[in-house]
Image (cartoon, rainbow, N blue to C red; front, side, top):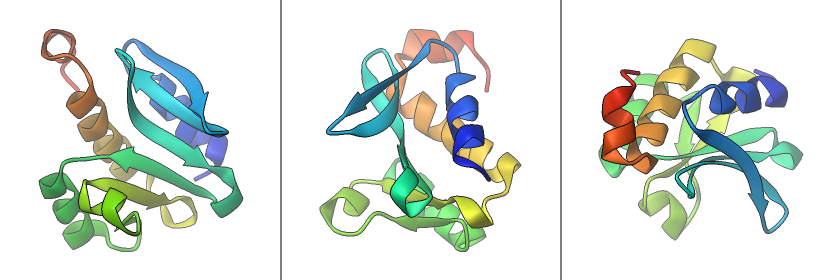
Length: 111
């Protein structure tokens, strides 16, 4: 998966905006970051629950791995774009978006 494809996918979720922090491109809904891009490492990053992270590791370990350190322990998950299946990434990104989106917004959009 290309970096541009990851970015386009993130922006396809309702009310998502592209911003940046500390020089890193991020994608936000209601001001909360649910995905970032790491072009220098050809990786995306998703903010997941620990349970969702564990599920993705069990089913798609070649595509997803915890971010090293305490961020990974909080559910932040690397997306290895060179191995990424677009449908699997879209599913994982939907989980991240739902985690960040307000419940009222999430309820209006069945993803």
